[in-house]
Every structure is written in structure tokens, then in C-alpha cells.
Length: 99
Image (tube, rainbow, N blue to C red; front, top):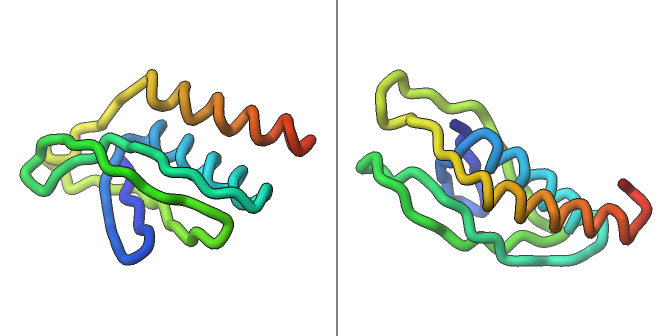
């Protein structure tokens, strides 16, 4: 799991989801663009829900490992979401020559 701190909010999501999200945020920043990304996250009760995050060129976010040592930290996996975000990142990188 990863803990993302962004705009005064902290949320937990899976490792691959967080990695894809950070890469996409970086690609958006390079182009001076913004987008809203829906991400599956862990609730404080241990369930999951989806949040919408607006990221843009001035976004400052931190992704760090998180493990509280119990089932609350079960990894969130969403291969389709990761593929979607990675595809968007590749498209941005290809259009600016940063592939």
C-alpha cells in the first residue's frame, strides 16, 4: 500500500495504482495540463471507495510506503485502472517526445 498526501488530504491506495498516478501527474505537469483521476482508496473502516483527484502542473504530492501491520492495509488492486492511467501517461509522453 501507499499513502498519498495531496492538497492537505491523505489517502491510501495500492502500490501499482500509486505508481501510475504519480507518473501521470508528472506527465501532466510537464505539459502544463490538468486532469481529474478517479482512484480506488482504502477507507478508515477498511473498506474501499473511489475518490476523484484533480491534478495539474502545480500539484505537489507525496507517495510513501504504508503498512500498519494488519488487514486494514490489504493491497488495493485494480489492473484496469492502472492500465488506463498508464495509457494516458504514454499518450502524453509520446506527444511531447518524452517517451
